[in-house]
Length: 190
Image (cartoon, rainbow, N blue to C red; front, side, top):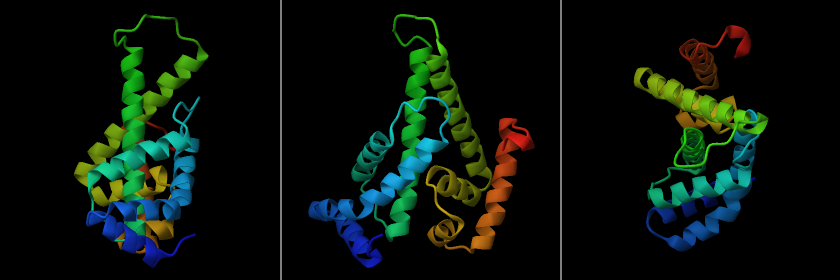
Protein backbone atom coordinates (compact mmCIF):
# COMPACT_ATOMS: atom_id res chain seq x y z
CA UNK A 1 0.00 0.00 0.00
CA UNK A 2 2.01 3.03 1.16
CA UNK A 3 4.48 4.14 3.76
CA UNK A 4 2.26 5.36 6.59
CA UNK A 5 4.90 7.68 8.03
CA UNK A 6 5.64 9.25 4.67
CA UNK A 7 1.95 9.87 3.95
CA UNK A 8 1.43 11.35 7.41
CA UNK A 9 4.47 13.61 6.97
CA UNK A 10 3.17 14.90 3.63
CA UNK A 11 -0.34 15.41 5.01
CA UNK A 12 1.00 17.42 7.92
CA UNK A 13 3.18 19.51 5.60
CA UNK A 14 0.17 20.10 3.36
CA UNK A 15 -1.88 21.24 6.38
CA UNK A 16 0.97 23.63 7.14
CA UNK A 17 0.52 25.24 3.73
CA UNK A 18 3.08 23.33 1.67
CA UNK A 19 1.38 22.93 -1.73
CA UNK A 20 4.25 20.77 -2.99
CA UNK A 21 3.43 18.23 -0.25
CA UNK A 22 -0.04 17.87 -1.75
CA UNK A 23 1.48 17.00 -5.12
CA UNK A 24 3.77 14.47 -3.40
CA UNK A 25 1.07 12.76 -1.35
CA UNK A 26 -1.55 12.29 -4.08
CA UNK A 27 0.27 9.48 -5.92
CA UNK A 28 0.69 7.71 -2.56
CA UNK A 29 -3.00 7.88 -1.60
CA UNK A 30 -4.69 7.81 -5.01
CA UNK A 31 -5.03 4.02 -5.30
CA UNK A 32 -6.62 3.74 -1.86
CA UNK A 33 -8.98 6.62 -2.69
CA UNK A 34 -9.88 4.79 -5.89
CA UNK A 35 -10.70 1.63 -3.91
CA UNK A 36 -12.90 3.62 -1.56
CA UNK A 37 -14.66 5.31 -4.50
CA UNK A 38 -15.26 1.97 -6.24
CA UNK A 39 -16.80 0.50 -3.08
CA UNK A 40 -19.01 3.56 -2.68
CA UNK A 41 -19.95 3.44 -6.36
CA UNK A 42 -20.86 -0.27 -6.24
CA UNK A 43 -23.19 0.33 -3.29
CA UNK A 44 -25.34 2.72 -5.29
CA UNK A 45 -28.41 1.21 -6.93
CA UNK A 46 -29.43 1.63 -10.52
CA UNK A 47 -27.47 3.35 -13.23
CA UNK A 48 -24.62 5.01 -11.38
CA UNK A 49 -24.37 8.44 -12.92
CA UNK A 50 -21.31 9.51 -10.93
CA UNK A 51 -18.35 7.32 -11.86
CA UNK A 52 -15.59 6.47 -9.31
CA UNK A 53 -13.01 8.73 -10.98
CA UNK A 54 -15.41 11.69 -10.88
CA UNK A 55 -16.23 10.87 -7.26
CA UNK A 56 -12.51 10.90 -6.34
CA UNK A 57 -11.90 14.19 -8.13
CA UNK A 58 -14.91 15.89 -6.55
CA UNK A 59 -13.90 14.65 -3.09
CA UNK A 60 -10.31 15.73 -3.73
CA UNK A 61 -11.47 19.25 -4.56
CA UNK A 62 -13.40 19.34 -1.28
CA UNK A 63 -10.36 18.11 0.64
CA UNK A 64 -7.94 20.49 -1.10
CA UNK A 65 -10.12 23.50 -0.30
CA UNK A 66 -10.93 22.46 3.28
CA UNK A 67 -7.55 23.39 4.74
CA UNK A 68 -7.81 20.60 7.32
CA UNK A 69 -5.02 19.23 9.42
CA UNK A 70 -4.87 15.44 9.13
CA UNK A 71 -3.54 13.50 12.10
CA UNK A 72 -2.43 10.53 9.99
CA UNK A 73 -3.18 8.44 6.92
CA UNK A 74 -6.29 6.81 8.44
CA UNK A 75 -7.69 10.18 9.46
CA UNK A 76 -7.18 11.39 5.89
CA UNK A 77 -9.03 8.37 4.44
CA UNK A 78 -11.83 8.79 6.97
CA UNK A 79 -12.28 12.45 6.01
CA UNK A 80 -12.06 11.47 2.32
CA UNK A 81 -14.89 8.99 2.91
CA UNK A 82 -17.01 11.73 4.44
CA UNK A 83 -16.18 14.01 1.51
CA UNK A 84 -17.33 11.27 -0.89
CA UNK A 85 -20.58 10.97 1.05
CA UNK A 86 -21.12 14.72 0.70
CA UNK A 87 -20.36 14.56 -3.04
CA UNK A 88 -22.97 11.80 -3.45
CA UNK A 89 -25.52 13.80 -1.46
CA UNK A 90 -24.87 16.94 -3.52
CA UNK A 91 -25.10 14.89 -6.72
CA UNK A 92 -28.41 13.36 -5.57
CA UNK A 93 -29.80 16.80 -4.71
CA UNK A 94 -28.85 18.07 -8.15
CA UNK A 95 -30.51 15.06 -9.77
CA UNK A 96 -33.67 15.59 -7.72
CA UNK A 97 -33.76 19.31 -8.54
CA UNK A 98 -33.59 18.42 -12.22
CA UNK A 99 -36.46 15.95 -11.82
CA UNK A 100 -38.62 18.61 -10.18
CA UNK A 101 -38.34 20.92 -13.13
CA UNK A 102 -35.42 23.16 -12.36
CA UNK A 103 -36.30 25.28 -15.41
CA UNK A 104 -35.83 22.34 -17.75
CA UNK A 105 -38.16 21.07 -20.43
CA UNK A 106 -40.32 18.25 -19.09
CA UNK A 107 -39.90 14.87 -20.71
CA UNK A 108 -41.48 11.55 -19.84
CA UNK A 109 -39.59 9.29 -17.46
CA UNK A 110 -38.18 6.09 -18.88
CA UNK A 111 -36.54 3.28 -16.92
CA UNK A 112 -33.16 5.05 -16.77
CA UNK A 113 -34.60 8.28 -15.42
CA UNK A 114 -36.68 6.40 -12.85
CA UNK A 115 -33.55 4.53 -11.72
CA UNK A 116 -31.56 7.76 -11.33
CA UNK A 117 -34.39 9.33 -9.35
CA UNK A 118 -34.66 6.26 -7.09
CA UNK A 119 -30.89 6.32 -6.48
CA UNK A 120 -31.00 10.03 -5.63
CA UNK A 121 -33.96 9.60 -3.28
CA UNK A 122 -32.22 6.73 -1.46
CA UNK A 123 -28.96 8.66 -1.03
CA UNK A 124 -30.85 11.68 0.32
CA UNK A 125 -32.99 9.54 2.63
CA UNK A 126 -29.87 7.84 4.04
CA UNK A 127 -28.14 11.21 4.43
CA UNK A 128 -31.10 12.67 6.34
CA UNK A 129 -31.30 9.57 8.51
CA UNK A 130 -27.56 9.81 9.24
CA UNK A 131 -28.02 13.44 10.24
CA UNK A 132 -30.67 12.34 12.76
CA UNK A 133 -28.38 9.57 14.03
CA UNK A 134 -25.55 12.13 14.35
CA UNK A 135 -27.61 14.13 16.85
CA UNK A 136 -28.24 10.99 18.93
CA UNK A 137 -24.89 9.22 18.66
CA UNK A 138 -22.07 10.73 16.61
CA UNK A 139 -19.81 7.68 16.97
CA UNK A 140 -22.39 5.37 15.42
CA UNK A 141 -22.72 7.87 12.57
CA UNK A 142 -18.93 7.86 12.03
CA UNK A 143 -18.92 4.05 12.02
CA UNK A 144 -21.58 4.03 9.28
CA UNK A 145 -19.67 6.63 7.26
CA UNK A 146 -16.41 4.70 7.45
CA UNK A 147 -17.89 1.28 6.72
CA UNK A 148 -20.67 2.15 4.28
CA UNK A 149 -19.30 5.18 2.46
CA UNK A 150 -15.59 4.58 2.95
CA UNK A 151 -15.59 0.83 2.59
CA UNK A 152 -13.40 0.53 5.68
CA UNK A 153 -13.17 -2.83 7.42
CA UNK A 154 -13.89 -3.23 11.12
CA UNK A 155 -10.17 -3.02 12.01
CA UNK A 156 -9.58 0.08 9.88
CA UNK A 157 -12.66 1.76 11.36
CA UNK A 158 -11.52 0.88 14.87
CA UNK A 159 -8.07 2.34 14.22
CA UNK A 160 -9.50 5.52 12.70
CA UNK A 161 -11.86 6.05 15.64
CA UNK A 162 -9.47 4.87 18.35
CA UNK A 163 -11.83 2.13 19.60
CA UNK A 164 -11.73 -1.67 19.59
CA UNK A 165 -12.91 -3.73 16.60
CA UNK A 166 -15.47 -5.38 18.90
CA UNK A 167 -16.91 -1.96 19.76
CA UNK A 168 -17.05 -1.11 16.04
CA UNK A 169 -18.98 -4.32 15.40
CA UNK A 170 -21.50 -3.50 18.15
CA UNK A 171 -21.85 0.10 16.96
CA UNK A 172 -22.27 -1.02 13.33
CA UNK A 173 -24.99 -3.52 14.26
CA UNK A 174 -26.83 -1.01 16.44
CA UNK A 175 -26.55 1.71 13.79
CA UNK A 176 -27.92 -0.61 11.08
CA UNK A 177 -30.92 -1.50 13.25
CA UNK A 178 -31.54 2.18 14.06
CA UNK A 179 -31.20 3.24 10.40
CA UNK A 180 -33.50 0.45 9.20
CA UNK A 181 -36.14 1.55 11.69
CA UNK A 182 -35.67 5.23 10.84
CA UNK A 183 -35.85 4.54 7.11
CA UNK A 184 -38.79 2.17 7.49
CA UNK A 185 -36.85 -0.75 6.04
CA UNK A 186 -37.73 -4.28 7.11
CA UNK A 187 -35.06 -6.41 8.77
CA UNK A 188 -34.92 -8.65 5.67
CA UNK A 189 -34.02 -5.66 3.46
CA UNK A 190 -30.98 -4.47 5.46
